[in-house]
Length: 352
Image 1 (tube, helix red, strand yellow):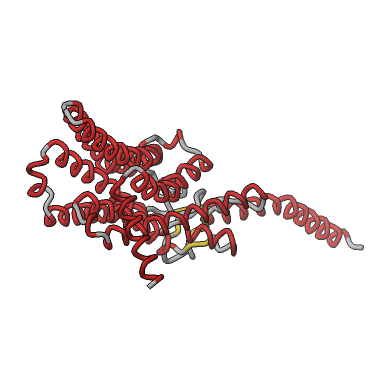
Image 2 (cartoon, rainbow, N blue to C red; image 1 turned 45 degrees about the vertical axis):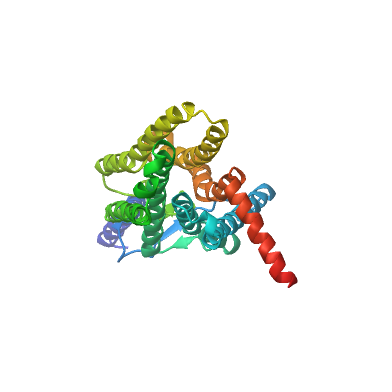
């Protein structure tokens, strides 16, 4: 073979070996480029949506917990619906206090239905995906109904303050028009809070994983997927939490401090007992609802973990709405009396 041909073959072999040595580096570079592209921002126009984390797995224990949550949800729906219908049907309960209580039950019906049905469907059928718009809608209605309930509980404390501390002015200060304005204010405040937080949360670019470490779209869990600096928004979220949570809590605490002073001055033992029974029911509901919300929205992210957030969220999305009608009915003779009366009336109608 000519020397020139051998020289050319040697050069080709050398070039081939150099290419082989460069190919792993090229593959690594291509893989890093694809990963970087996966971390790029996406939004409503470029992605199908998010994937929610199931609250339960396939174990027997989690199957029991799932059945328990479903049972509590059914009881919450039945109890709050019964409370709304009872207050509407019984004339003796057509008072400002029970009107506000019916609004609380009405809010609870929808508040728990924003998240639990999606969780049930996800566990039974594996439908854990949620569209970008669906996630925004769930987030909006959750914050709307939750904030409205926070404000309504504060207004219910004002109702009890007027009833006990200014009973002579109660018909004027808590007229039907005032009650309607109170309910409208709570709904308006809730919608304003939800509109601000939802629009600010969804304007962030989201990167990489679409999996939300939560069983529904909640602001703190969604912010962990953002590929932009959310520190400023987290400060806005904290301020919103102060307005929606701490201001009503302060208002409720002040109202009940004044109520306690007025109750201790009462000479009637029966009047004191009735006032304390009514107020203790309301305070129990306030503590059950506000406590978990303060943990979720007021504590820094370093105090949170996905498992703890899920358990706390179950508490105020499922358990508290179920307990509200139970607490108000068992601790209130007027409600239990009206319930017995309605049941007896239904029995008479059925026997007729």
